[in-house]
Length: 436
Image (tube, rainbow, N blue to C red; front, side, top):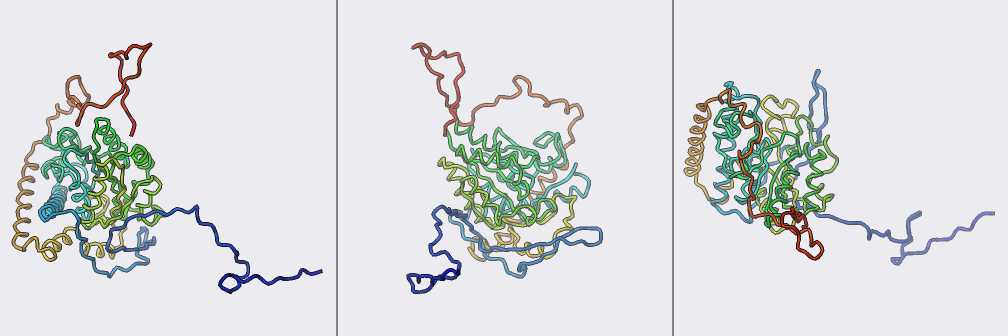
């Protein structure tokens, strides 16, 4: 015996629901939405595919428009004319210094390799410029412009790569591992990717124990951000509400691995959602965008509102280091990003859009940078190599060799409590306050 079919009832609009469709609206009350601010004026999307050419594996652009013209620089909400000119000069000095380093390497004067930040000068210089003098920076290998902004000279960096006795490490290192915790508040780069993040979080915690909220800034690459210590350090900063400004430099290549093969999410700033902190995307070739995002993140940190993750999108315009010719990068990608050169864009902004600089003034500014660089190069080249016997010094910290003092104030502490109605023993150590 068959069952009797019944006609579905009409909906409130008089239309009958489709066969199999639910007659009740799904409940989306449990869904949550998040906002990732994206300040870019263009949002390029490219898809790469791996191909074999002879015995070598390389990549080609599968999809994406490479013919578009670069947009104008976004107007800064905070930078004055003089500040824009100062950032521009740092960027020029950064670029010229790295060119000089490349020449010194080819002349056999550099010990080891050289790492370049070509195409990333706006990110390095404008971000570091957002910090106050008493705040802290933890640069990575491509942030040599940030080191210049924090007070290191081109001679310091060139001597470092040449392992000269006048270098910041007195010839004990021939790479970018230089810092200054006494006057410039710079934590030396750590080769193990991601390890700077918990270190800088600790610096922010130390300042707070001394009664001061400060901004601390460090960087990680699109490849390095996948490391476990990146998560651990940023999660600690988020939980403790520490003023860490983490800049993820998404320069599209983790050594020879493209971003398409590193992670599934569209934007690395989305990772901020998992930490419960703000995530921001900027065009890493636009100095004004970089500065504004970093300025706002630093202001949040100073108010005690916790960390911020900033993803700066740009292109690494050279290989991983000087030994890497980057043959795996599709040539059209280089051409596309060459039109978005951060220095050329800022120069055009200053000369043609804002009229803050005339051609003659720009020529004098560039000439001044060249003079400074030539003088610093001479200092670096003529600096002697360290004496062999000096290698035995500074290996171990000896009593009285240096004193580590609080930067801001004596750390706050609390008594451990009374004993039988008596006050706590003054000789007993007090526990440091770790509360937010």
